[in-house]
Structures are given as structure tokens and as C-alpha cells.
Image (cartoon, rainbow, N blue to C red; front, side):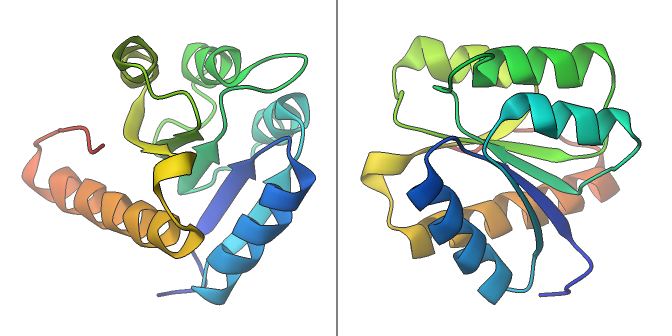
Length: 140
């Protein structure tokens, strides 16, 4: 994997943030880890444009849905592949995330960290392939 792919990781749990940051970094991603979605929004508003955003949904302050609403409404990362990584797994949560631009949805409790990295990589590669072909789908 190229180290030029920038991945924003938004997760309020410090242990999970560190663990996933290490896993993605070991897989060649340039990881920008944020424990607070407000900080992630500030960086995006300053012009940073990651190729991938992986975000939790349940966070204090603004939640992941609100974070995605801001990203979408302000066109902060229009080319980024957005993947939700959450313990919320109800169909309505998934549908809401998809409506807000998520191309992938991973339930933390059902995936190992290695599986999360592999699935995010797969979703990113598929999104890049669809850009070429012009098709769009969502991966769960």
C-alpha cells in the first residue's frame, strides 16, 4: 500500500484510537488520528483533504452523524471514501450513515482490528475502481 494515502481516524476511545492508528500505519496509511470530531472538522476546514475518513458514531459533543452532516454540507472532503466504524449496527443507523455519504459500515464488535483494516482497504480500492467505471455501491 502506498504511504501517500491519508486516512482520518475519528474515534473518542483512546485505546481504540491508538490501536487502529497503529494498525492502519503498519499497513502503509498516513494516519491523522482525532479523538474529537470537532478537531477533525477544524482540520478539514483548514483545507486538509484525506482520501479516507473512518469515523465512530457514538462520541461526546457532536456525534458521528453530526460530523458526517457537516462534512457533507460543507463539502469538506468530497473525494474522500467515508467508512463508519461503530458498535451501532441497526439497519436505521446504517441507512442514515449511507445517506450521509458513507461507502462502508463496519460494526466494531464483529470485526478484529486486522479485519477492519482489510475491509477499509477493500472499500477504498472498490471506490477507486468505481470512480473509473462510474458505478456506486455501499459495502457492509
